[in-house]
Length: 318
Image 1 (cartoon, rainbow, N blue to C red):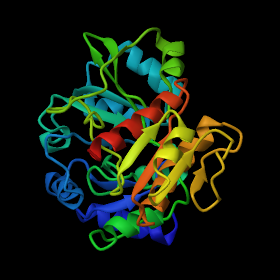
Image 2: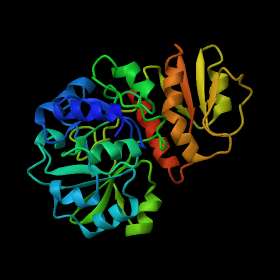
Image 3: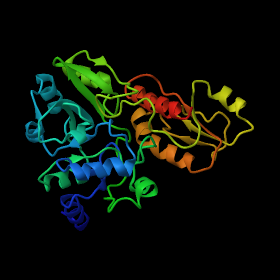
């Protein structure tokens, strides 16, 4: 364990909050068994207490320490996708404080695949509650600089882990009478999940009391006004007199100069676009623009997850 992780371990054992890298986004982590430490996460993020957190564990063998009555399909999904960006919402055990679950009798849990996060978890005697390391509602961080820019003065340590490989949050799936329900589309597509367990129903929006993290309709948003476009040529013409930054997915530049847009993928690759999306949103949000216009993604695979993030960012801006 390197010196930075030694410090991270000590801080977490003391009940402090730190930022850690995962393959999805950087997380704001604390001992999930320590109610006071978890309350610091909510305070630092200014996150409403009714919005539950994800608990990160080190191995599937640890799952029954914090969850019970686990459906067979949950074990199938864990075998297929863990470690990785799939969160399962399961009936919790008493060991998990209710502040973690916002009073729900279920807990959201996953095993991250980032090697640094996994190494840290293996050296701890407790799991980590860890939502994204950003102020509530703002763009998620996909590198340590994003965390330092937004929360650097509020936390003791940001563990360096490079750029997050997935770039968007985990897919969240729960169960209703042992049947799977998709609560949040994310880095693993609906099609990939259905290939393992069959058809799943979707329930991925909640404006009041969410059953799982990531269900609020307003989220992932820059401070700059943000809109989605299905016709870039028309959007460019309508906003000629404004200072606008464009997020492009298609490999044409619509006559824009290079300073006006960020290309998320030169080869229409959705995975590449996902990895770059939040970093591009951060970059444009720092440019004092009148407007950010994002080109809508194709509604296939994780393009559905990316459009979900764009939609929530747009809804926050109105």
